[in-house]
Structure formats: structure tokens, C-alpha cells
Image 1 (cartoon, rainbow, N blue to C red):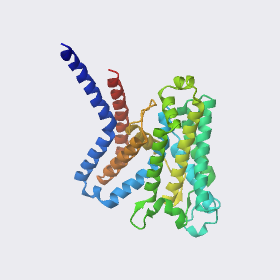
Image 2: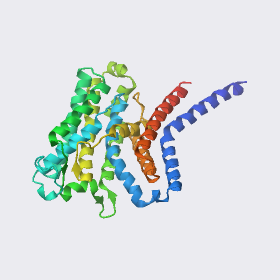
Image 3: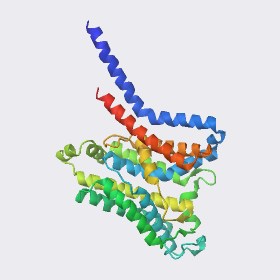
Length: 344
């Protein structure tokens, strides 16, 4: 009799484990399936040149998505990252050019400013400052993150226009362009932006998985009140994740300006959607407390593969936006489904 009674429980447990495994590996499975589909539909998809191009394009939003993972793990959101990319890239351009007077120049010979490292540092510091101000408003003024970062989206975009007098700053020396266009090793190695993306992804994974700070981030996202009662400085942790995403947006702004050989006010426009999509599709819960950086990497690759494949198949850009939006909704719905099944 005991064996007969235990079988349904064991079966139920096995079912729950199966659903849990499906939820864990669903992004990777979907990525592989998507690549197989595009490889069959468009033979050029698997060419080395195209795959490198996908990785290079993914790296820009992927860098930001690493920082966004920290934010969403705490149950927050940052809608301003695209604008931070623009203002940080503009600051880097002003530093490397020595001003904003060469807004229409395509000649790197007119560069009279500081060096490349100073420009990169300025971009990252600008991103950190933007993230710090928003984190301060969220933690000290108790304004919802959605409202603060929605305001930041407009403020930082306007600041970009103000800094540039409304025009682009173009024309950088080769050592500046190397960070967005170079390869290691030259001439046919991995693109530099891809290397930057992967290095920071590994570092972020180590921080979230193996450090005390990472455990605190998960704790705050899981239950803020319980984390506070446990002695954690919840406000400081929340502030720190907005500083982190600001840093990554600033870094991305520098790399993007280097890649395009230009800094413009429209840079990063619409990146918020793709970054949040990459994080959510990668398995990080919008409700906080659950997710991994490596899942975000897979999510970013999935979005990049999807967009690239649709372009190769001549799907219009506005149709691509519809498809990505539907995927975000489906990813959140799937996350809720998995959680509800685990409670059974």
C-alpha cells in the first residue's frame, strides 16, 4: 500500500523538476532552435562574417544588459539607459576632441583633446553619475524607479543635445576607433566589443554567484522587508545597482561612439526595450530575486540572432519591434507559469 501511495507524489515531484528544468534551459533551447531555423531559411546566416556581425551588434546592448540584470534582480527597472548611452558617448567625444566645435567634422586630424583612456573614463564616470542621481532619488525621495528613470530618459537625452549644440561630433583617431572597430588578434580575430562584453559578463557572474554582495542583491530582490530585518542596508544596495547599470551604460556609450566614429543625440534610442528584453528572456524575473548573468548573455544573443535573421529575411523594422514586444510578453507569462507550477 505504501508504494502505491508514494508513486503519485514521486510523479508529481518529477513533473515539477521537469518544469523547473524547462524554465531554466528554455532560453538556450529557443536560441538553438532559432539558429537552426534561420540557417535553413537563409544560408548566409551561418557565415563567419555574419556571426561575427551578430556578436558585435549584440555586444553594445549586452554590456548594458549586464548592469540591468543587477537592477531587475532587486525588483527595479531603468528606462533611461539608452539616454545615458547617448550622453556618455557625447562626453567621451568632447573629451577626445577637446570641445564640441567640430560637430560636423569627419576628420580625425582635428582631435586636440585628451587621450583615449581619459575619454573612456569620462564616459564611464558620466554613466556612474547618472545612475547615482537616479538611485539617490529612488532611495532617498522614495520615488518609484519607473518614474525616476522615465524622467531620466528625457533629461539625459536633452543634456546630450545641450552638450553637443544639437549636432553630432564625428571623426576620431584610429586608437579611439579601435575599441569599437578593432579585432584581437588583428586582422580577423574577435571584435574588441565582443571581448569587452564577455569579460564583464564573466566578472558580473562571479560577483553575483560567489560574493556576499551578490547574495545581498538576491536577498533584496526576494524580499526587501526580510532583507532589512536581517540587517542589510537595503537603500545602499539599491543605490549601488543603479550606479552599476550607469557604469555599464557609460561604457557602452564609449564603445558605440568608437564603433560608429560618431557621437549623436539619437545614439541608444530604443535600447531600453532590447536591454530589458534580453534580461527577461534570459530568465531574470521582473519581480526580482531570481536570474543569472549568463541567462542575460543568452537572452542578448537570442535578440541579436532574431533581429539579424529577420533582417536577412527582409522583414521590415517595425515588424521586428512587434515580434520583440510579443516575445517579452511571452517570456514574462512563461516566468509566471513556471513559478505557479512550482508552488503546486
